[in-house]
Length: 235
Image 1: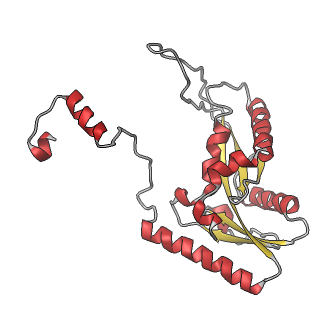
Image 2 (image 1 turned 90 degrees about the vertical axis):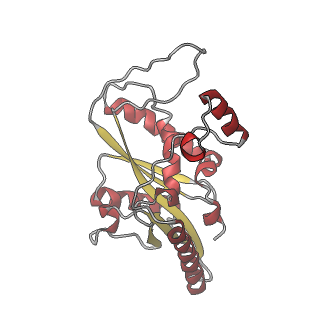
Image 3 (image 1 turned 120 degrees about the vertical axis):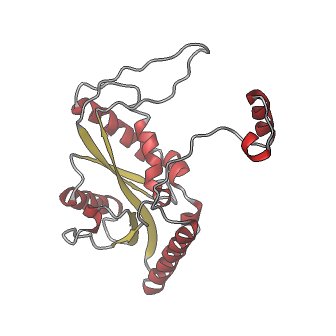
């Protein structure tokens, strides 16, 4: 205020006026400097809608559905989350910094909250191939649907060696634009199950993750509340 308006106020007074304006002090959400602009995101959404309409015209007797897929690396590195504690006390959480990981492959259906998760040791073409085949066998065994799968442009998604199962069509997301990826929003539900804990080894971590993934698959309403992007459901 002093810089822009030449007015010198006590900090508490400045806070009071800022709150009256409906403002609050917040930490900005990190966004990659090469992230797509709002105009580019709007073009992407329109392009996806047009692609779905085109497929519906080609296959009028087939159901066209949109799923999204992403991977999350989870391991023995500590995840510290906020907890409720008495005023004036500072809670603590034990942690041990180690560098072992497991990858969660997550598939989500924004319209219904249906989900499918796999825990695999790596993120590469062979693991992605396995994940795709298991996903297709689980959600579309008779190929009665045509699945548009939103994926980022990771090397194992774009590789020529990857053989996408029949009935699944990849639709690459814009680079560095996580806000378009529904699956990105479900990872917080997974991380909260392992936050503020120390695991002796990866097996112990995987036991908790498996139970959490199973729980999420059994509670589509919870998942849909995170991944049910309005612009996807409107297509």
